[in-house]
Image 1 (cartoon, rainbow, N blue to C red):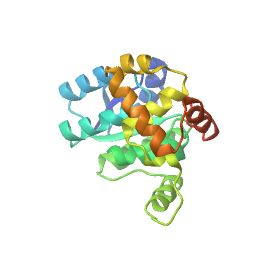
Image 2: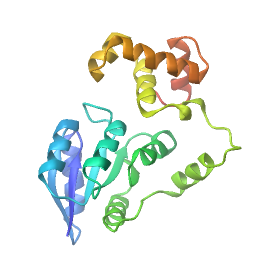
Image 3: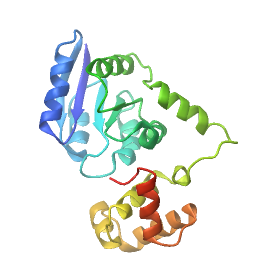
Image 4: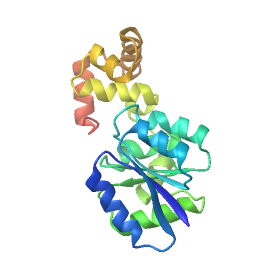
Length: 210
């Protein structure tokens, strides 16, 4: 039996996942979570083989928490789900420790295929993600500037693009204003930009802004 934990902040989305998986033999949803904190609690208290993790859960960045999940629960395979197009987040999620990525617009049967693949210890990537991964390994290819950012730096970029001030970002991430300012400086340097307006424009044109 493949035991699955569902982590999504929308109850109706979790219900949809449960109905899809309940119709399948050998798959059981054993716990649900609505934010990062409850997700970690579920992992600590409920044995499972697969975690279905929405990328936009409240709390710490899901990309950032993947490292903790891999360290604390190495036997749990993480399937990241998101509304973001694959080229924006899939490779970053895989590099952070996910075993698979699924866009929320995928067909129900794709979810089942992904869960079964992860339960068998395999990765689940679409042809689009496979191509992106291949290109990212080619040192001669031109990679977009944001690909050079760390997970935290990328998160800061997204929040700046969403119009949030340094103080707001610091409060939401439980970091000091000085630390966030340092990250912002690094982002600007790596992106070869000088202002938040430039970062925001880049994020919008690249489809990174939420």
